[in-house]
Length: 228
Image (cartoon, rainbow, N blue to C red; front, side):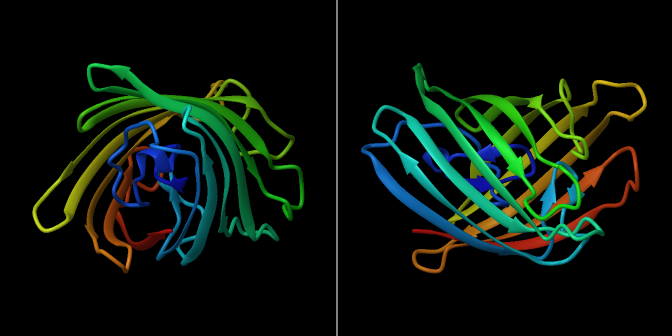
């Protein structure tokens, strides 16, 4: 899996941190894969998890012929305290429903092992895709005392991704975070990306991020990812 501005995208529907070409397809056979990457800022749902600084990221995945997958993904973070890294664990099932419609459902646990308090939380998620279009949602089902998201918080999104000439691709995503309690203000974020794939050096991307409620500043970041 490689993290995007929305939830996570399985390597069965491989998208780089910038590509956002979300979708699902049945893997041909059981396999183990890995990915590494570097980003100038690690954005998640409209906000920098690395306080505007660079992040080194990577993951390891197992995919079965049945469509079952499981894996882990990690990145350094900076929340202004002693928390230095995020470790995600996930499992799910993806495949085709027929007529070109793909699906992906699963559970992801976001862990922050060195956080000063208990900041972990978990979500169930689902996505449907058709061609260049995708829609999905993630729902918090377990939280902890210091977690940023809590039980019953909901995130949903719509994405568009398509190929251009010479191994370039573009992606766009609009996501909405709906908090369960009225003390926190719901917000919408927008992401756009232009990516260039290479045969041996991975994929390079230029990305824009905007959220409509808090600082309302357009932010840019660049990324590189390599799968193997």
